[in-house]
Length: 116
View 1 (spheres, rainbow, N blue to C red):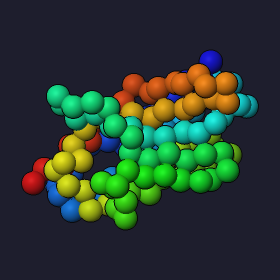
View 2: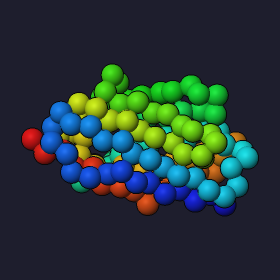
View 3: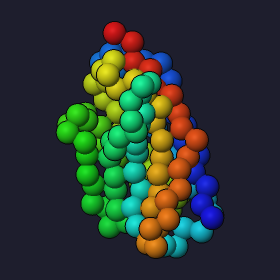
């Protein structure tokens, strides 16, 4: 079992920055990748960014150049640095971990609200 706890969400004005954290605990030996997803009201959950155990990153086109995903393996923590935030970035942000045997775990989510 793996437990994921997100933190760092909040209210920010457009153009501002936030850093989200995802602390992982439990059986971490077989991780395929970790990632951030988001879900806005009335919309489907969508991929924001992912990072593999080898450090390869992938971003949604809508956040490229503004968001940076990273991880600290020693702390079992993943981060999402979000800069130049826009009102359309408003959503609940979820942390996901996919194991090497294709089992996924999700955090409880953290709200990010960007005011105009």
